[in-house]
Amino acid sequence: MTKDNKQNHSTDGENWIYSEGVRDHFFSPKNVLYDEANYAADGVGTVGSPECGDVMYVWIKVDKKTGRIKECKWRTFGCASAIASASMMSVMATENGGMDLKTAQNLKPQQIVERLGGLPDRKFHCSVLGHKALRNAVLNYLEYAK
Image 1 (cartoon, rainbow, N blue to C red):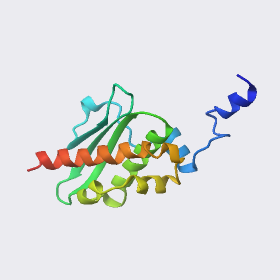
Image 2 (cartoon, rainbow, N blue to C red):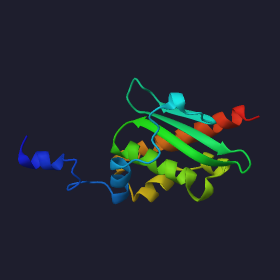
Image 3 (cartoon, one colour):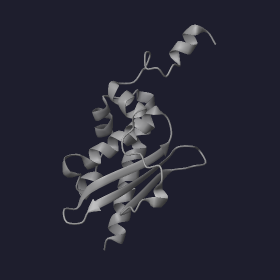
């Protein structure tokens, strides 16, 4: 590997091809859950396939009085775009008192990408995992909250 190749594949951030938002959420992801065995979620969502490597897990806690998401935890096995997108999704779901469940179900990957400051076109599909897993967690919550 030449010095130029090494530089282009560096993780030091000097030649980072992503936005500052992606960089922040990739290097310092928010709301990651490392120990789901000791976490009591109100709703759980999973998207993807462990066999192919792209899988996302989302756990939510809902304020029963307001119907808003008070916690949104996640874990994914994926690239920088998937990690940053999941991290941003979790921030969006819980900021300003939390998203109401209907808004969370209708969250679009474009909204996540916009908040990150963009993603390369070939990486847009990575942002889809987070919103789908969140939607599944909300559906799981609603199914058992009856």
